[in-house]
Image 1: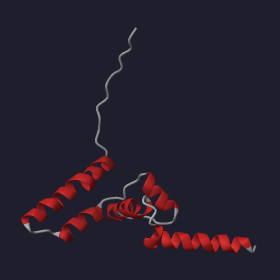
Image 2 (image 1 turned 30 degrees about the vertical axis):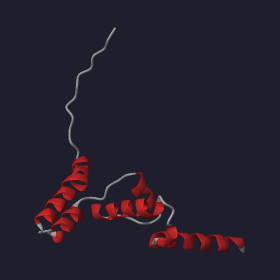
Image 3 (image 1 turned 60 degrees about the vertical axis):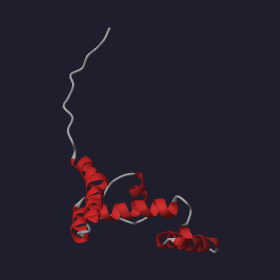
Image 4 (image 1 turned 90 degrees about the horizontal axis):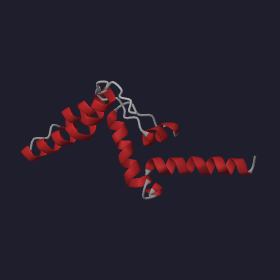
Length: 114
């Protein structure tokens, strides 16, 4: 016996549309402008800074570390840092990684003599 359910219409959410902008439209616009030899960086930066910060597991981890994002520009920057420095374990070459390690060492050292 089969039960059929009524299909509900699918809606595009604001966050999904923002992801399309961040990951498709803005990069394509940049490449197109670059090919034309007329990159309007100010306009592109203004656009990505106007988009709410992306929420995912990686940005949430940065948020837990006290690194809060106010725009998609910052979340994209954090994702790039994670891919270029955190994933290949290049913490000592990263300003954020250095700060986290310094805080960890200081906390660990202070607990040793507490």
